[in-house]
Image 1 (cartoon, one colour):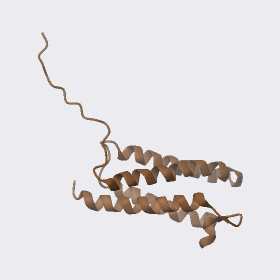
Image 2 (cartoon, helix red, strand yellow):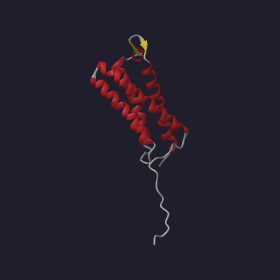
Image 3 (cartoon, rainbow, N blue to C red):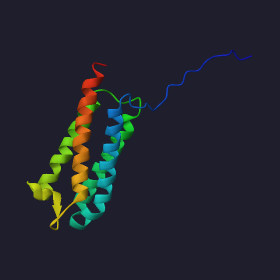
Image 4 (cartoon, rainbow, N blue to C red):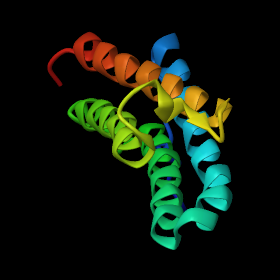
Length: 136
């Protein structure tokens, strides 16, 4: 006969413990999806640029998936912040060094504005979450 035992299964996924974690998720998904969408326009300029947009979008989405798993570690908040900041800075060598980086064909490029704002908010959230989680 089988003994009655309790099997405690550890969930693969964890919910963020802070509302800031949810903001970070939203910002990462927004910028990830927008980079994937922007890759369709980038391919007209350069195949390499389109591939970089796709990889960047997948990086944000993949990072989001990792964040909601039990494999996320505190130090990854610093990686997420750095990744977001590097992505912000990567716009300028490609599009120009001033405000013109946010324009395309003489008009404000909403995708550039939204992605960079989302990445800035994500970087701030990640640094906040790193500080808030303390030593683990």
